[in-house]
Amino acid sequence: MLKNKTAIVTGSTSGIGLSIAKTLASLGANITINGFGDKVQIEEIRLNIEKEYKVKVKYADADMTDSTQIAKMIDDTIDHFNSIDILVNNAGIQYVAPIEEFPENKWNDIIAINLSSAFHTIRHSIKYMKKQNWGRIINIASSHGLVGSPQKAAYVAAKHGIVGLTKVVALEIAKQNITCNAICPGWVLTNLVEKQIEALSKDKNISISQAKMDLIAEKQPSLRFVQPEHIGEFIKLLCSDAGLSINGSALSIDGGWVAI
Ligand code: NAD
Image 1: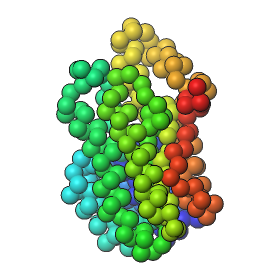
Image 2 (image 1 turned 90 degrees about the vertical axis):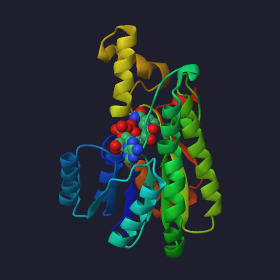
Image 3 (image 1 turned 120 degrees about the horizontal axis):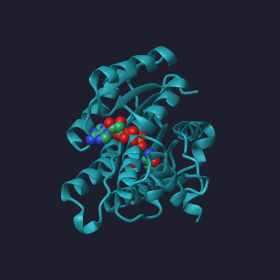
């Protein structure tokens, strides 16, 4: 379905991003993966995706806080693969603290990685999508792009911001074969959430498994974690011909979180 297409997935060395990269590769797309981690492990990830799905995979070590490195990642992808067809803005971090104690550097990092990086990737890649008159931009927001939670000032602000950015880009490209949507997942069991489970277990002096249950019961009526693969499957639909009429939406995959 995506043979001869190229996808960039930011923050794809682990968690949701890695799962999305694999789904897109399984559909035949060549991929630029990006994110931090152990260089040997990242090279293993790169080679494994190439081998398993018979596609080409390039690694870009661009730091999503740096607009120059982001522009270089886009240019290098074009030099290497000749097109950018699918852009998934997924890189993200979390920090939890009451607003009066929220460190300024954590605010700045979260806004840069979870929001501004998408502004930079989109503005640098959209000209290629316009030229080829085909493109899919998918911004990984969160339930926190639609509703708030205490102690997550920067994350909630960034995720609401990316939902707004999604709408503006969608309107600007509406007449072309390009779409821009946000996906708003609920809890997915990744590194980002495991850190919050560990903190909860310590704070309340409860076991990790109890903390996991408490965390999910507070927000997610399904009482199940969203599987990363479910997000990839949804992106498959957005990348299909049937996805052409879905534009500017904030699409919840959250086990009912925002229905309450
Ligand atoms: P994760 O920690 O497993 O993955 C985050 C990825 O971003 C990693 O590859 C990491 O290396 C990369 N990254 C971090 N800082 C970076 C930087 N400065 N430059 C480049 N890459 C950087 O977490 P995840 O849960 O898979 O999160 C992926 C996205 O999904 C995030 O945007 C997150 O906000 C969003 N999300 C997660 C959940 C959840 O429950 N896990 C829910 C809703 C939304």
